[in-house]
Length: 329
Image 1: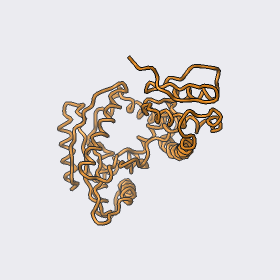
Image 2: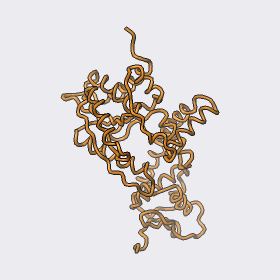
Image 3: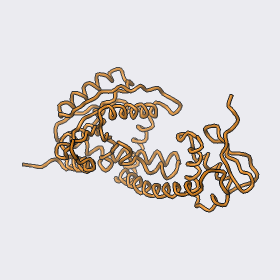
């Protein structure tokens, strides 16, 4: 009897590796898969259903209905039926309330999706949620980081694990996911929003495809490798910055002490000091940390740096400090 298609075997191995950390002790832990019905997440769900009994874990699924299309509820119900046929249990269809904000619809949908997944995981008592991001998604993430010029951490892409979330397919391509489903005669749902160039992610996907065509195959894989290398480097710098912040203690801070750290560590120190002082993490950019760092490295008597959270970073003599700004009206 022939074995599974090579793509299926690769996905099964990736899922098996992800489940290994959840070996049961007295009771089989529950692992959920977030599934939209698209090829990537459905391939992940199919192989989770195959591997879970062998790993001694229970497997369930979450389908998030973002409500962004007229038939979204019907699609979510259809996908839930597909997952039920795989004997996944429990299967939860959860609605996400998407309210576009200043960062656009994509960011709002992502935030709402993770909030829905978090609630579903807690309610079900799941130890982990598997996400269907692939090598191609990782490549697009790195390309977007390059375009934004937002530093090494943005080039690190999506981590394989963070909190309760796991991404087993970061070494698997979209093509492999489709090959696996085709070989098993399993149909998936094509989200029309995946072809809408109004979304940044769709344009990034097309850009990677263009690079593959113009420069030759392997661009996506190279970008994904870059993410892994950048993540390791960023992890070391972050650890060194954490140690530095602990050593510096509460402000005000001596300019000489800050200046002694290399620039890649010092900018991370500034980010931590600002967040600790109350600056919203999502609003602290390189522009803010650079302005703070100029008080140490390019001091010309300039006034305080204004940072999110209505904070001011100022230098007085040989010290710098973070203080609240004037009350906002």
